[in-house]
Image: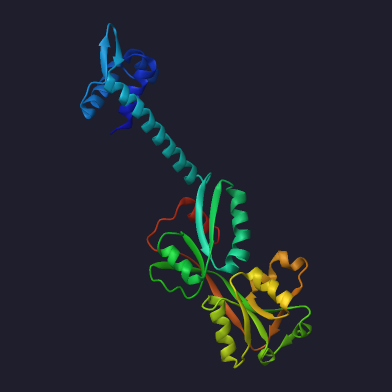
Length: 292
């Protein structure tokens, strides 16, 4: 039903008569009367009745005014929220990524975006690349950052950055005192690894296997920060994203150092994904564009 007709009835109720309401909203009396009549026809009942020279609401008219106010308020709220989202005064970005992306790639990007658009809220999920792909495909997330290759065909992807997976050790580890080591120097060493099946773990295991190096994975963790902490306290080695090693927070004073492995080059492409054919929310679309 046309909200204009409901607003016309509300004006009559507010001003106490058709003549007064018509003057207040800038309409002729006859035009306003026609609007009220159209509303009555649509609802199938009389809403006003004449009393002397004025009009009063019928019982059905009182119901129409009560419900009509709520309809108009909800519609005005809808328009306001849409306008705020379009102008990026508000909005929600639902994005997910792996441990490295969430901990070391997204924070600076989100901080820079929210500096320009402080009303936008981010809902961030940390999970493995394949889980993030599934969440984006199911519309649980609008954007995701995953390790290539992207496996789900319904997703589109573009490369954000090329990331290296580097060996790290505590400064107390015997290998940390060397500027670089061959891959065979890792033979038999204790390793703190990511969970089996995660993208970084698959890449690391494959590279070590190709180099014919066997290590002892003594612990599996999900969090990059937890891996770095365990590397420090257990004097084991670990493989993590270079993003973690070069982050500003760790550069200030870190007991962890990267070790260059001369014949072990582990790289991955981090991809920004979204669902093909899905229209992103204004906030998500603007955040996606911020990476360009």
